[in-house]
Length: 95
Image (tube, rainbow, N blue to C red; front, side):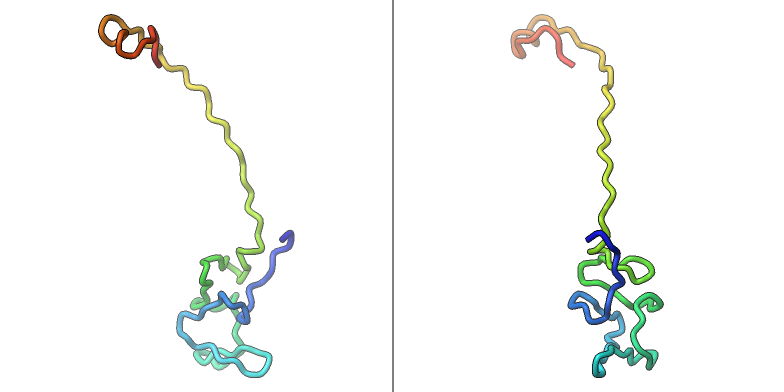
């Protein structure tokens, strides 16, 4: 999955919003435009898993960039307990 691949109308997850796909031999035709199906130019092209990216690129082949963000240590004022609250919780200080 290191390369990005173009989505193909032969993919089992590909859907046409107009239901205008027709298979003719080895190619896939669009009955709406009477041309061979071009996913990158069609505004009705969809993916069943919603992975179709602009330009007709299959999102299943794209590796996501993830960045681990560590939470910043927030300085929270310490609350000192007295009396009944101290007996219930059992600690002198809570955050």
